[in-house]
Image (cartoon, rainbow, N blue to C red):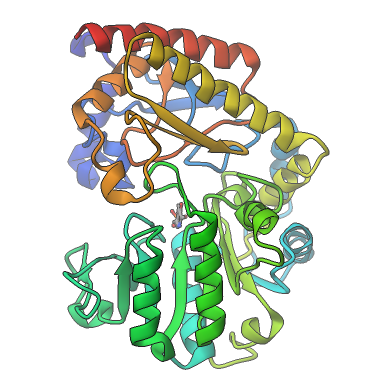
Length: 437
Ligand SMILES: *Cc1c(COP(=O)(O)O)cnc(C)c1O
């Protein structure tokens, strides 16, 4: 596509004149990879079409929510029906109760749940709840994990454990992040040191169990076990941010994956988003009754939302969850996802390009590195220029992956074996050009 005929370009120009960077969420601007973002005209199943009418096999799926693909008939029907009954009431509805029941049935570590509208809101509220419930201020987060853009969570590590973290955004006062400690993911020794130094002041430890915001990095089983033990021992709450992994890696979410290796494993607070809304603005946080009853109107921890539990969004989420709860759903999703990562690995190997990949359920990651990284600095050691060449090679040929090397990928139940085969064939071609270039 030459720039003069690319219809995404004039849209991007119009957007940039009115919206900062031309986008309503930064990664969409393609700043990391360069080029013009594709403006989506419509989507169906595993595909979307851009302003040029070019079809793409979609491996982002709205960054995870579209686990059934786009326009699933049962979900469409539920949303259309709900819309006819009213968009928003600011009063409770039965569907909110149904959605709460459906989520808690599959993720039994939560006895109660509250619905909100975004993962950011859910994560921010979970931190407030952990602080309110424990009467403590400090929180622990990990380098490379993303928990939304609440002030207290936009932090990177200081120079040592004793120093305060630094805000990663302008507009966040140092005072607001002074209670947030940032540790290296999968570093047990550092975790133990942090609890030894500050254990009695720690309200909560927040972690992505499989970090999808540094591509795809699993918390090792020993690391997760230690997180659980240390929180219990010191009276801190373990907050699992499952906004991305929830209902994406397994019906019981990532916590059920860890419970296979760590008997009885459960978090104190679970944060959900993405899949539970099926593509509509819906997220949630939940935990044991005693903790959740700290929330207003029962308890002293304030939290509220005009559109929380929105009737159309809950209909969308509920219909999605009912579809994915069908027997065999995750087995088939995982098989397709593994076929993709294995096919990509073979394509890279055929051209002698270093490559490693991992997946769980319908979430995957791959690296232009010979071995899977265990933390953020190793992820970021990827050859960025080579990743960008791969990204654009795939994009030009109709395969849409995340426009940044630190993002995960997603397969939906609408992706067929043929879609995966086509993708792998294209990857063979692109890796050959990378090896030649
Ligand atoms: C996407 C995401 C969030 C933020 O959710 P939004 O709905 O974008 O606010 C928080 N945590 C994790 C792990 C996420 O992947």
